[in-house]
Length: 297
Image (tube, rainbow, N blue to C red; front, side, top):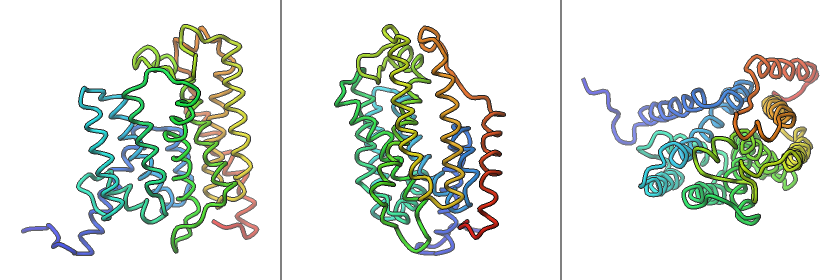
């Protein structure tokens, strides 16, 4: 018996779509507790699309951070080509590229986000330190456009891509930048010691002082506060999920802020899972009255 669907078989394509998404969903389940928890608070379809976006971003990151072989640039180029082919034709033999392409085509994500993203990933293969200019470029491509991708998913209304209001898009970029910079602080020991990279201009594990750390923490807090202003523009369930990840990252930033610089460069600060679950539960409770007053799901 041959179960392979005939070419153009809609049922077969739907099965392939589901299989590709299942692969993408496994990526976030394995790699992220913070974002994974936030996505579990979203409606099913929205959660699935965020999982597709996360998986594509994670695979690119694994090429440059985990594999790091001499042909990593070739592999990254090939993955970018396959992602863009999936955007164009709606199909890929790479399950993660296929899942991302399907979601991107649905919600209106395109090359204006993916090209700078892959450009930043490529910088990880060629740059060990950053100037102010290259740092801004890197954060834009690696994080701010990912914020735009997620916002496109959150605002998708089931009828077609929605134009993102400028202020809301700017807030999504600020939030993406905040998360990335908090990650840089959290992972400073590994980035510097294992990967040989220094992201913050002029800052290394050897030179980080308590005063500089306080300045970097304040910069992250400013980004988070600016991003919070856009929360009311999100659908209710998206608002709960994003608020939960904001709370988790704020708690992580609080822990980083009270860690001496000399300790931060030797250890990885984290928020325990029970605290993350408590933050999610609190946001669900706070949002409950809106569900009884006609709030949108």
